[in-house]
Image (cartoon, rainbow, N blue to C red; front, side, top):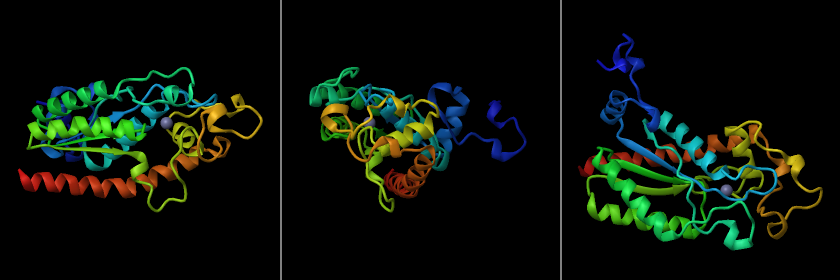
Length: 244
Ligand SMILES: [Zn+2]
């Protein structure tokens, strides 16, 4: 018997999990209740002097865990492969830039594998959101749609769910830095930033000054995102279940 069900309390049933940490019976339990797979998509990319290069992965993965807690489902490990990073854009180092074609192929294969595993909704959730990245993921999802009609494949990013918040998305500014502080406390060091106004060309930063960031702000941003994203995901689940 699956250990997930050995507890007499029904609330002990597994409703979500980190895919790579789950035993088969736990995955089966999630599949039976909410066959949703979240694929957090990140980057290894310069996020200025104060923040880790894995910020987009940390942000996307953390958000997907919170989504899965509310909708059910599994969360794959973040894929840190990004097209059009700030390296070709502005020449910043410590960035691994990946071709859009490879990202499309990988997205297609992961989508198809998850459909074969029984997931009916696959959400490719990217924390790195220039149009080239979104387009590459969309192209992979479109190919998967043509081959696996019983599963819905959706591409989205954290900046798609800002409605109702008094903040805008950025690159390494107060918005992204607040998420980094929230999901990985202690990982940001604003004292490593130069003592002057920060710019895209000199620092690789857009949006509000990251010195305005805080863990509390990260929590607020997440609350707004969940308010917008959870109902959208519920609609996607309903649509595909009605079609099947
Ligand atoms: Zn970022």
